[in-house]
Image 1: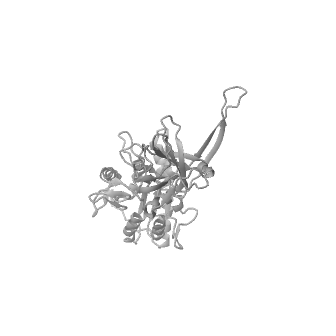
Image 2: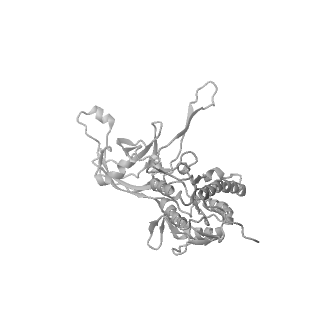
Image 3: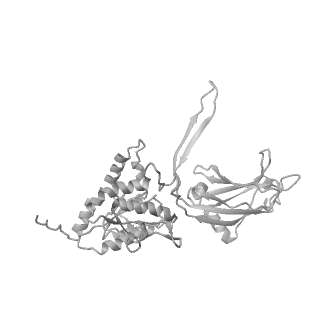
Length: 398
C-alpha cells in the first residue's frame, strides 16, 4: 500500500511578455496494485440548517490525501434535498482512488449544503481513514462534523451534526475479461497479455516435455456450479485429469475458463505451488523435473504462505513467476520463511511490462520474454541434480 512520489516539477507559463503568468506544478504518484472496490453508504444526523426558507440540501465530498500534504477530490455523493438527517445512496469506489491502497492514509470528508448558483455552503468536515471506515459500521462509530469558523466564534459550539457509516462492504473483483481494460481481454484482433506470455514461454518449453501434457490451473476466481472462490481449479474443468494437450490445449482451456468463471480475489499463490510440489515430490530419481509458470498481475494476498511454500518447494522443483513481485526472486537475497531459507534460488521474476513492444513487433518482444523467463532453468536443473547426486543416464545404443 505504500506509495512513491515519482516527480514534482513546476513549469512556468509563458505568454504575455514582461508579465508573470504563473506556473503549472506537475506531480506524479505511483498507483498501488490494490484492486479492491468498496461499497459504502453514509447517513447524517442533525446537520446545521443553512437555507433561509427550508432545511439544508446536504451532500458529501471525499478527498484523498497526497504525499505532499495536499488533498484531491475523489468522490461526491448525490444531493439529498431539504433534509437535516440525510441518508445517501450506496456508492462504489476503488480503494486506490480513496487512499491509493494505504489503509491508514487520511481521508477527509466535507459536508456541504447545495445551492443552485454553485456557491455551496460549507457545513463542516471530519477526517478518517479507510481502515477506520471499515471498522466504523461494527463499532458504531459516529463522526462529529466540525466547522472551524463556528468553533472559533461560539464558545459553546459542539458540532454541526454527525455522520455515521450505514454499510461498507469490500468487493474483490479482479477485472471483467469482456472489457478492453482487462489483461484477460479476448480481442478479436490480438492475444491478451496473459495469452501472449503463455504462448511465448510455453511453445519453447514444451519441446522439452516428452508427452506434451500440461496440468494447468487457475486461481482467484468464483468457480461454478456453487460459485465458491478457488485458488486451485483446473482450467479444463476436469478435477481428475487437469492435463491439457500442448500449449494450444492450455490456451483453449484458458479461454473456455474465462467464459465460465468469475474473476475474484484475493490472489493466493500457495495452494497451486503446493499442488505442483506434491506432484514433483512423487518422482525423486531425476527422470522428471517440474517447472511452474505463474502469470499474474503481481498482487499476492498470501505472501507469507507463498514464501513458506517456496522454501519447501526448493527441495523438489522450480518456480517461475511472471509478475511484479521482486521480493520472491532469490538472485540477491535467498527467500526465507520462519527462519528457514530456500535450499536453492528457484524463482525467476520477469515483469511482462518490460517486454511490451509499442511498435507492434510482438514476435520479437515475446521471444525476448521467453528467453529471460527461461534463462535460469539450466543452472537450476543442474544444481538440483548435483545436490542429489543424480547422474545422466547413458545414451541408448542406436
